[in-house]
Image (tube, rainbow, N blue to C red):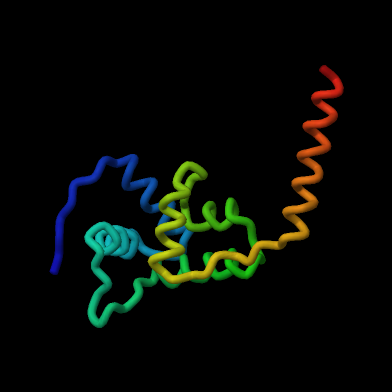
Length: 122
């Protein structure tokens, strides 16, 4: 089935750029966005090509091989779209990275020292 859509020229240029950067066509981008918007998973719940690409990025994040910020950038989410990132992690059933307790303790010590130094200066 074909559909004609009227889109602002600048939006279409941005869509073409995004499609090129993600190795897809504008048709694929539009189909993926429409499917996501209406919650459609296709015949037999098949994942879209976009889901497969996003899943790969999220797995890399889950395994601790990239940062959350880089993963969000790679799937086209701005830092203020964290809730969309959480939704993707949940919808695609990707486990969250394991917490490194020792790293958290080291970071807490650094913050505590910085607070102590700041209070000594005042």
